[in-house]
Image 1 (cartoon, rainbow, N blue to C red):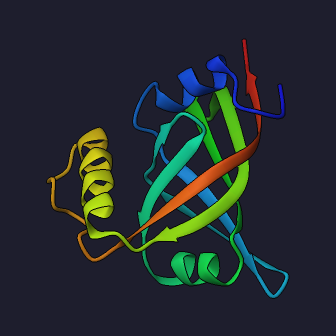
Image 2 (cartoon, rainbow, N blue to C red):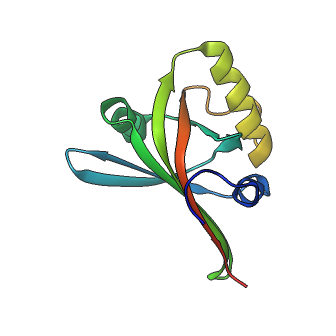
Amino acid sequence: MSDTTTSEAERLLTSEPLMAHLATSVDDRPHVAPLWYVYDDGVVEIVTTGRKLANVRENPRVALSVQKDEDGDPHWMVTLRGTATVVEDEDAFRETNRRINAKYGVAEDAHAENTLVRIDVGSVNYRTYD
C-alpha cells in the first residue's frame, strides 16, 4: 500500500512502542539512526539532537521506517517519507517529549536536552506478513 497514510498503517504505527529508524541525507550521504516517535494524523514527532538534528536543519527531506518482528520474523513494516521541521517552541517540545517518554516508559522529563522535530508525512508504504 502506498501514498497517503491509511487507517491500517496508522493502526500499526500507534499499536505499540517500537523503535523507528530515521533516514536523513546531507551532501548525498545517507545517515540512518534509531529513535523513539509518536504518530498522530499524518504527522510524526520526534525529539532529537546531534547529527540527526543537524542533518534535518540542512536538508528537511527524511524517511522513517518502523518494523514489528519477533526473533527476526517480520510481522509488518511501515515506511514514511516526508518533510521535517525543527520546532523551536518550548511548550510544544515539553508536550511531545512527555508523550514520547510516556509511550516508551521512561521519566517524563528524560531527554530534556533534545529538540522537537515534526515530520509532515507525504507518502507511506506498508506491508503485513502473514
